Image 1 (cartoon, rainbow, N blue to C red):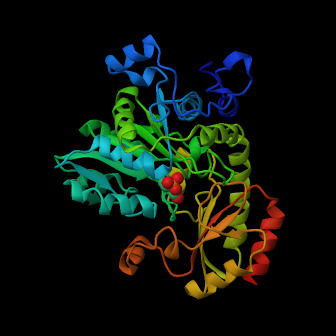
Image 2 (cartoon, helix red, strand yellow):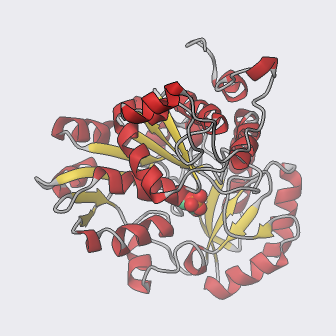
Length: 388
Ligand code: PLP
């Protein structure tokens, strides 16, 4: 691969191996491989990641697609998993030991919050919460036993930006691993490794695949860290099936195109909603009302396809609006070619108490819209008639 390639070229070509002259990566739908002297030797020498032995350990389709994600993020190594949660859980269990402290925020995807608060304390791992938008508060919350800091680049669902340059510098100074979930931004809009992150994670279920037809996760970063995570992945079993890798690799070829379109339509929809009398509030990094506007301009090369807005009249009115939409579908998940809408309070964030939701700013009537690649006029027309 040429290091000067742009993100569209990387989306299409990186990870290509041209097996037996093939243009695209063929499907290696096999659970195991014929054992060879080099495979036996790799097992004996403790480096089975370098040979194909068994698909839970490694497979050609996993290798190609992991390389594509790694190159897009500017990382030296990558691993793919059976879901975003398999990536998060394998990573945290690999990096944290009994007595360690994980620093994070409550402004996170609900599944990540639930794994952290339900599973990690049982293993003797301490959890601390801070405000990822304020580097001083992040620094103050660091303890002598803090080993990992985990934030989302753009948070789910409130679209708050992590103050990456400063938080990256603090983590580096203190020798703490900074993990950034870049699912919402995608490497097309933001590459956290360039701003001091050590590991980037993705729910590839969302934008990277982009077609709402598979569940997958990825981690990218330094090889020495990922070799340790690989061991945990092999023990826990969260590898990605070859067929899902094949589909993910195909989906990712259009990543840059899709995200560029979603950036344009996201802004168009956000501006429309901001001017609508039935809407109380709109959160979108590209609006002048966005509280972290200057940081958004500095970090983001596109403002994304996620728009969070609050309908006047609370949850009841918001539920009614969703039920009246025809093109935009009422479904959880995001990042696909289809526009999807859901209410975080009864889906992704249902585990948070009312007090926790209020503390974060998830107020009644909040809806999370994932803008797809349909015509912008059709999306605006659909929202307009539902709001009316
Ligand atoms: N991270 C973020 C930001 C998410 O939104 C999600 C799922 O919605 C996940 C991680 C978990 O990914 P998966 O559903 O692929 O396990």
